[in-house]
Length: 94
Image (cartoon, rainbow, N blue to C red; front, top):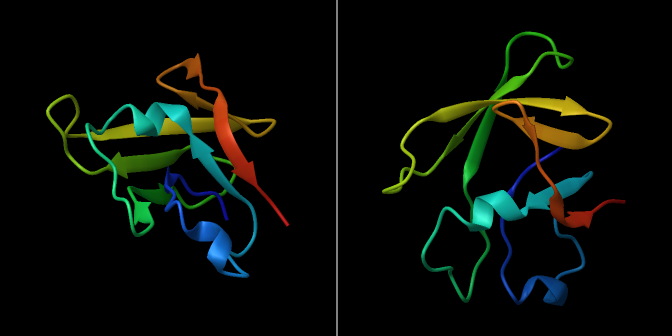
């Protein structure tokens, strides 16, 4: 599982965060002007076009800067959004 979102500061209190590998990307944090303080906040929905090798469609909560979806490509666990490589902010894996 690959997901992106904003993490609660209390996430260490639980023994399970997400099943599988979960990655958080700094580019997502830039889309909001404030963050929740007491709960995790998931912002993306992904949809594969029938084949997990193909790019997926990523939709974030609408904001003043963005109200649409992006087509994201993955290569060697590095996301590429709109033709530009993005850098991982935090990464959790089991």
